[in-house]
Image 1 (cartoon, helix red, strand yellow):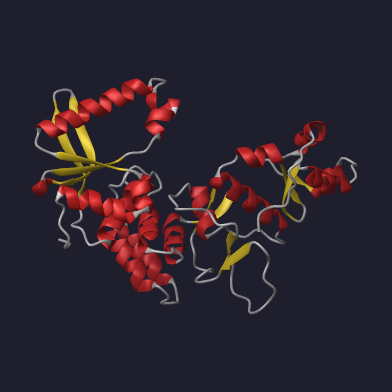
Image 2 (cartoon, rainbow, N blue to C red; image 1 turned 90 degrees about the vertical axis):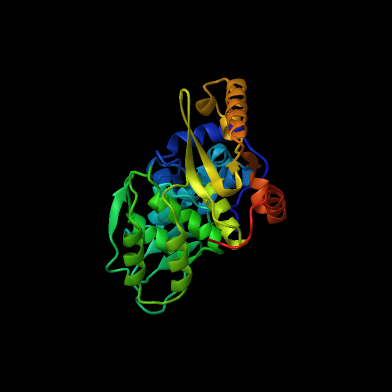
Length: 328
């Protein structure tokens, strides 16, 4: 269920409540009581649309919530759930992945903790407890939060992934050559073997074997895995093309067929931090790069996220370019 709030907002009350928020952006009932305020005002602020109630005792100013992306919202829920817990538990699964900034397809509403199995008991709304091999799991602090290590986190997320493509995206990040917290394929396999259950073990083993340290984004990982699922020959990743002033590295290449595929995101055109405030310069550089690759005889395919969410479009592009089905 989404956090409760109404549509109407009162600016004066929001300004009065905002200073009570802690560094994470949350306002707690206990903090509100500490300054001698009437806790019923928090309920009224929710009704006015000034606060969002994340769970019992935890609120966030509506402006903070509206400006937060999916990862930030999940982390706000995580902090709220952690405060409500009777003891500190390590974050695990998708929540640990969010803290590690691991590539994920989406962020669930429920917060995941690592906890030892103690038999039955009531489940908590918005909380998932991961109990497999909890006592032997490696944990550490990241940004002040106790979390499962990279290898265990990646395995937990991959095991719960809806499909092969999303599992590969997470495992690619764990192996990514530019990730300062990267692990090895052997560490991933060892972490998987620690789990007492064989649930989805073969699925995750396949994903680990396919994962690569060479993908530079979740979209690249997802696209490569989707090509594999669709039966296409797997491309070479980050193939280097030296030129007069340096080298071009392309996302995907099939040298035998003189075909290159590039994942095209709009961030480099729209985000000033990626285009030095000059999107036109980025467009020109992309054109010059593509012209050079074509001069070498390559056909260049542009792959957009919409092609990945509509595989028929991707199939059309790959078939038209002459990429064969049948993996090598």
